[in-house]
Length: 545
Image 1 (tube, one colour):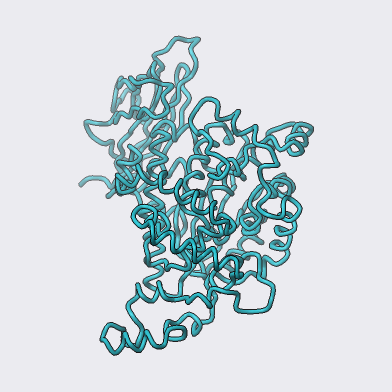
Image 2 (image 1 turned 90 degrees about the horizontal axis):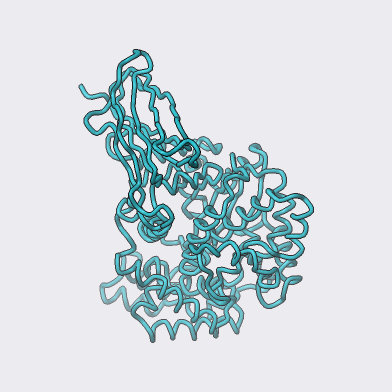
């Protein structure tokens, strides 16, 4: 899944912070956080405790390596996938006639048409079409050629034993019904029976008992979020406006790939964990991720399906942009956040990544990735391409995404990602600046306000000593807009799930431009006390008449 790969990428970056000899030793012993520790068949790991670092670094290489054939077989599979990567079939590239309902159910289609319950072309309702798209014989492999590794486990590519497992799983899903069934059809029944069921079966290599255990654990994982309808209000989920959160970790959907899958772009190189901790909690991030998966991603899949009934693989094409990623960003707290999201994705939304293109890859990543990818599921590793130079990754993205769907800052003709992100800003806001401060005694910064703008200043923190904030006119000495506003967190600074504090220091009125304003913080702690972190946010709006 996407989360597993991102977690692995951060582990690779973490490796880059080690001395060369220690890095080699780590790779040989396998003592590194592994996505296999998240597998529900191997036990769930804690994510918020102080001992989580120790837990992650004790997972050994023997715990990974795929299924069945062991490490050597897994490596061979990865190599096979890599060798044939450019020849991979586009998702859903089935013969159109072979997918039609009439082709496999002529009698049922004729009966439905005679009963008046069919569409103009003689097909039954859309739901019936999805559920009856594949008869059991059509689940079997339909050709004599060797199945491409990335097509394994899909309808029309199943072996006799896999079909038997499919039938047993399908019957169990219908027998249990209720929450168990809702877990399997997490994106709704519009996905189609064969496509939804095989996602879960592939995730556990068609081992029936493992699949049932996975769905049971996913059902339990969904229970509490389900009571809240998976948090339909993103601001309520986070406890802060999502636009501020996105500035700390830019991620967005932007159009669709040629396969019909949504295009997802993530920029971990711009991740600010300190900024995230100033505005929300680990539980808030957890709730927000549920919102994204169930009320954003799911809606996009359903919309694509309604627009194109032949869109069958409910997956996304991911672009992971590592531009700006530094070792300083790869902290235990960053891993905790990524791990929290990965738990949800790998357990509750299996097999939802069609392809991942990792762009702007640092040099040391290539070698390290070749070593660490053996610890990731071979099929997942085979979906990942690492490309360093802009010329080459732009060309690759253009092969996967039409120009009118690809953002201009990634080589296409669609609006750039900054413009797309800006559309999620609160009504009326034209731009936003976020600035992270570590204040020990004093700190100040100057910001510009355009002639047609006015600005409000909001400060977020977990600092319990606090600071006094003032805003002055840099162009006119002695002119003060705001003087002596205290910003202090009154809660427990060590409780990750206690909401932080935010204060609008321009609460009386916004500051109108044109102007250069100086925002200054004076710490209320002693000279020898440690620094405290503040996120200063400037929200720009059109100037009032």
